[in-house]
Length: 202
Ligand code: IMP
Ligand code: MG
Image (cartoon, rainbow, N blue to C red):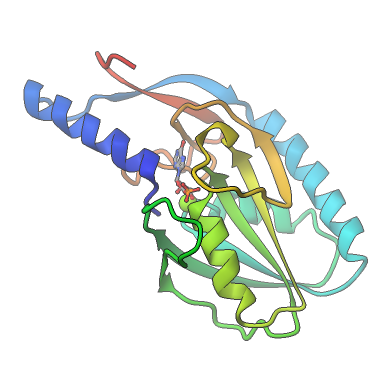
C-alpha cells in the first residue's frame, strides 16, 4: 500500500541514490518495538475484542500485505467465531476528507451485509486509507464495522480519524518489520525497527 510518507521517503531515497550512484542506502537503525512488546499488545487486543463481540461472529478483513503477520497472531487470540477475508487497497493522498480516495486492488470474497466486520491494518499514518475504506465498506451495510491497527502514528494525521483498537502508538519514524516493509523488504523481521538512510540528513 502506498502512503504519503512512503512516497516522500522513496523520493528522497531516489535522489540520494542518483547523486551517489549507490544501490542500497537504507539500513536498520534500532529496534523500536520488541517481539515481546508486540506479543503483549496482541494478547491485550485479543482479549478486548473477544470481550466486545461476546461470542458473535466476526468477519476479520486483513489488509494485504502489511497486516498479514499481525492478523495471523491476532486471530489466534480472538475467542469468537471468525471468518477470514482479505483486501488489498491503495490510497490516493489528495488530503480531502470527503472523497472515497481508495482504490481496491483485491476485493473481499464474502458478502458483509449484516455482518460484524473487523478490519485489521498494520499501521495508521495519514488516516486516509482507513477512513476511506471504512466508508466504502459501510456502503455494503455491515451490522458493525471497526478497525484494529497494530501501530498508530497520530502525529502524521491528515484527516480526522481514530481507529477502534490500537496496539501501540509510535513516533514519527519510518518503521519496518512485523509485516511492515520498505520497498517490499523487511516484512519478516520479528521486531519492529526504525529504518534510516545511510548518510541521510533526517
Ligand atoms: P495512511 O494512513 O493512509 O497514510 O496509510 C497507511 C499505510 O501506509 C500503511 O498501511 C502502510 O502500508 C504505510 N505506512 C505508513 N507508515 C509506515 C511506516 O512507518 N512503515 C511502513 N509502512 C508505512
Ligand atoms: Mg499497509
